[in-house]
Length: 180
Image 1: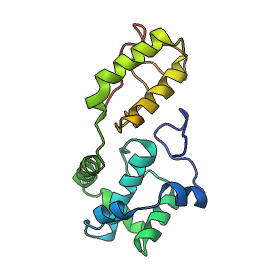
Image 2 (image 1 turned 90 degrees about the vertical axis):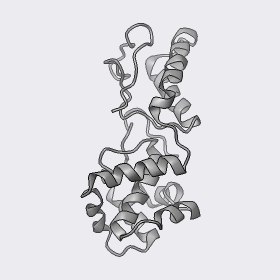
Image 3 (image 1 turned 30 degrees about the vertical axis):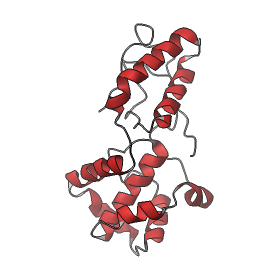
């Protein structure tokens, strides 16, 4: 997994061929699920969602908001001659949502909402016990979510707090991350 850091939270950076081959290879299980889709655009869009959630820990609001080299690499693996067909994937809004739900189920991913209260308790403990700064606690929270195969929230901010502005959340560590 490529470390994105807080600056790259929820976004892809540039990807080298080595990184593509290392982190975005489709295995047999991926190909089995992708193969159930009809149409190249649907297979490629589904594949993008699989590798996105695996890499970023979340689904993107726009599943096509990825580097072109990633689209090309997945198309190459799937034998899709025209990667630009993926533009059709988002024509039907429900498709990306249905695919995200199926991927979540098939890969055993928990929703953020399902673990949010447990995470809030963990954050409270970290704030009181470790003396770590807000950035370290947030990075720990991301690792905590990944260890539990839980989806990350759409934003690393909660209750108006951001690790970038250095202010702690109100009430010690209280507040919650929006699930958007």
